Length: 533
Image 1 (cartoon, helix red, strand yellow):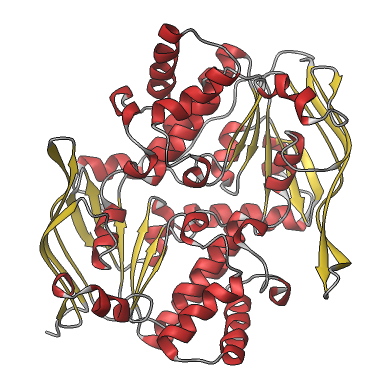
Image 2 (cartoon, one colour; image 1 turned 90 degrees about the vertical axis):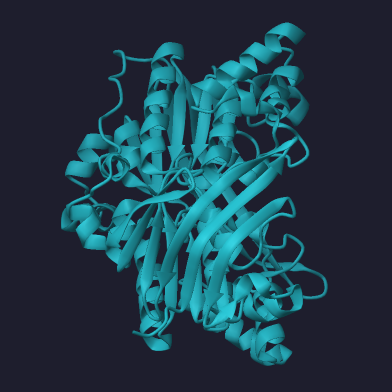
C-alpha cells in the first residue's frame, strides 16, 4: 500500500504556563492520503487547530512538541525555518479560522495574494495581478476588479474569508489545511466554495484536512473523520459509518446537538425600544490622482425597521448584503443617513460625546472575536472595561461581576487572568459575549455570535441568551447566516439583499411560506444538508 501523504504519529503538544505545562494534544495519530479529505471534528478547545498549526510549525515559542509529522516522505519537525518556508503556502497551504487576524491590515488584497505568487512561483507583477483577479473571481467575489486595491477592513467577514481561500489556493498546494473555512460564509456561498474545493481537489489530486465544528458540513465533504475531545482522538473511521453508528458517547452528543426550539412569546403590544427610518450607508469609490468620487458601494439603501422590548429581530442575507453595516449604523459605529430613535430619544443627530451615556444600553458582539479583543489586556480587564468606563461597580463588586459574566457564558472564572491568544476561537467568542452581558444593556447587536462555536456550545449560548432575554427583558438584533440558529432565536426576521430588505415577517411564517425566490434559495441551501443527511 502506498504511503500516506501526511502521517502524524503520537503527537503531543504542551505549553508553558506559570511554573508548569498544560498538555493540549495527547498522543494524536492519523493519516491523510493523496486526494483524500479527512475531517477533524470536536468542540472548541479540543485541540483541532493546534494539531493543524503544528504541521506547519506555526505554534508559539512556549510550545513543546514530541512525536512525528511526515509529509511526502519528509520529517517536518526536523526542517529548519528556511526549509519550512519552502513548504508553507506552496506544498501545504492553510485557510485560517480568523481571516481578519491572518490578513495584513496594511496591505491590499492584490498585494497579499500577489506576494504568495511572487515568492513561490516567481511571477512578475503583471502576471501576479492577473492571477490574483482570476482567483478572486474563482472564489465568488463580485466585481473582483474593484476589490484588488481594497484593504481587509473594507471587506465583509465573508469576503475576507474568500480572500483567505484564494490565497491558500494560489499555488495549487498538494495538501490544504482548511480550519473552519466556511465559518463566516453564508449558505449559498458556502456551497459554491465547497464545490470549488471539490473541483480543485479532482484537478490537482489535492488532499484536504478539513477542520470544522459543523457536522452537517463535515458529513458531506469528507471521506474519513477523526473526533477529538480534550486533546485526544476518541473515535475515527469512514464518515458515513461514524455518522450512522457512532461508538463513543461524545460523538453521539455532538450529533444530537442541533439548535432547536423557538423564542419565548412576546407580551401583548410590547413597547418600542428602537426604530430607524430611511437608513442609508453608501461608501464612495475614489479613483485618480485627485481621488475623485466616481461611484458608490451601496451597502444599505433606504432601509427602515423597528424592534420592541424583549424582542429578537433576526437579520439574514448573503455575505456583503449589508447586514453588519446596518448593525454598526444602528449603534452609531458607522456614519449613516436617516432617522433613528432609541428609548424615545432621537439619536442620529447626537455627537459621540452626547451619545456616550447611551452606549451602556446598546452593546455589540462582533463577528471576529480575536480582532475585537485587545491582545494586551487580560480577560478580566476586557470584561471589566465597560464597568470601569460607565462606573457601574465598586472595586470589590467589579471582580464578582466579571466572575458572574464569565460563568454565565460557560467559561471557568479562574481563566480571567489569561490573555486572548491563550484561548480557542470559540472560547474567544464567549469572552466577547461576556463583555457585552456584563453591562446588562437593553439592546445587544449580535453579529454572527455563534459562527465560531461548535454545535453543543451553540445550543448552550442560545439557551443562555434566551434565559437572559427573559430575565432582563433584553432585545437582540441577531445577524447570522446560520438559518437554524436564527429560526431558534428570532421572533421576526428581515432578509437583506444588496443593502435592501427583500422580505420580512414573523419567523415561523417566513420559513414556512417564503414569498421571495431569494428567501427560498437561502432556506433550501441551509436545510437541504439536514434533509439529505
